[in-house]
Length: 146
Image (cartoon, rainbow, N blue to C red; front, side, top):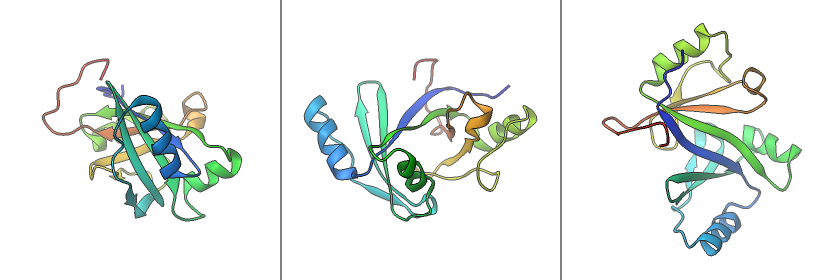
């Protein structure tokens, strides 16, 4: 069993990061984070907190990034992934492999936006949806709706 703690965020790939962040700010009255580049993933990210939900906007920084490939197939953008918090990304990765699921890329967790370990599971193993597993902040309280 994969030890998921609850919801982390939904990732939405967008062709224009600044325009998407401005649109969410205008429509919902939220304050998006400043853009942050994650070179290992070839993306720039803006986080938007909307009540209890977190939306991660992603735009590619290079043509070979997975988000660039996603946008080739979906030029207007779209839901890229769903992320769940786990207590320990290494242990969760072991559980994923034991369940016969495939981890995307090198097969091991790597640091994500917040500097905590993350990994993705092949969408063919999860209803056609890309799931990200993100190590929760240490000491964070979680329930089934977080």
